[in-house]
Each structure stands twice: as C-alpha cells, then as structure tokens.
Length: 114
Length: 133
Image (cartoon, rainbow over all chains, first blue to last red; front, side, top):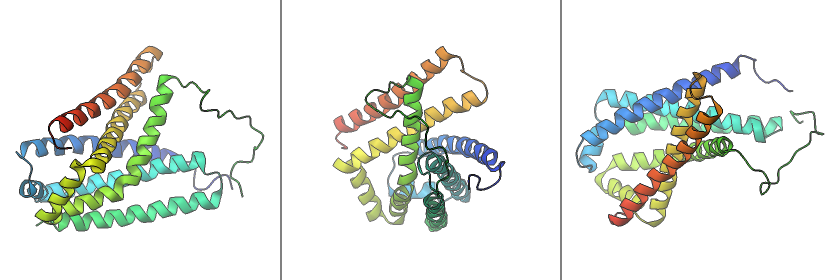
C-alpha cells in the first residue's frame, strides 16, 4: 500500500500550492491597500469594504486558495509524520471535510454583507 | 499496516544535539507556522463572521484582539503569517533559480527570520505603548 493515487498528483499539488500562494500574496496586498485607503476603521468602513461584488468574489477566491493551500500543506506534514495508512487517510478526509465546510461558511459570511 | 517497510533505518533525534543550519531553522518554522495558520483558519472565519455581523459583535472582536490573551494570539498569528509569507517568497525564488547560492540562501534565511520577528516586535511595542493592548 505504498502508492495511493497516481504519480502525477504530486506535481499537480506542487503547482496548486504555488498558484494559490501567488494569488493569496496578490490579494493580500490589494486588500491591504483597500484597507488603508478606507480611512479610520470602524464597523461601517469594515463592513463597507466587503460590500462590492468584486471584493466578495476576490475574498471568496482567497479563502478557497487558502483552504487548498492549507490542505496540501497539512498533507505534506501527515505524509512525514503519520506512517500508517488508515489514520493518514482519516486525517486527509477529516481536514477535507472541515475545509469544505469552511468554504461554504465563507460564502454565507461574505454574502450576508449587504 | 505501515506504509514504510524499512524499519531498520538509523535515526538521530536528539533535539538538544542537532544543530540545524539557518536554512533548516527557517524551513522548520515555515512548516510550524503553516500548521498553526491551518489550524487557525476556522477560528479566523468565526472572527470574520462576528466582525461583519453587527456593530456590537464587531466591537467584541476588537476588544478580544486588543486585550491580554487576544493580543498575544494576534501577535502570534501575525508572526506566523509574516514568517510563512517571507519563507514562501524565498522558496518561490528558488523555484525560479533565484538566490540559490549558499551565501545568498543563508542571507535570505536570516532576513526572513529577522524581518518577521522585528515587524512583530514593532507591532507589539507600538500597540503596547499606544495603549491598545
């Protein structure tokens, strides 16, 4: 049971890890500029930052990139430290489920900003 | 059912005697900060939800992150994010063949370590003196 999944999956994940990192870095810089440009931050300005559709979509893509990046990173850690197949797969699936839940939750959080 | 079959490999795990080169220190901290951030994601989403829900909850989130435990948590997370970000940039550089010589790699490793700690120290100090902590 040494090989679970195809040999190419590692390359896909390597690439996705870098693509998500670059998107997150760019989004964080853009968000920081919007944040600093919004003036003194109180509830109204903070809430207002997330009002435009473009910000909702950009932020949701950020959360999706973050979750994919985090899952791939945790997978690397589990591969190094969890040497038994069943607990390792259980951890993949548990974090997969938690993170998919987080993605749906993020949609609700962002789109409840009117 | 073990995935690894070779159980006879030599190993040396005396953490007090292992002397990692600086790149190794930055690398293990990259992993540790990544793990910390990964586990923090649901908590941060919860804070985001509260902060956008109502002015009262927004004030509550601000109060939490500016006082005592919340302040320490936010400094820890900011350090993790900064270190992970800088170490990640360093690795992206390596992917494109930038800064791979031993001397440059050591310098960028020190820079990653020092800048992340220094910025967090600065934020900690200004919030402490500014009375927000």
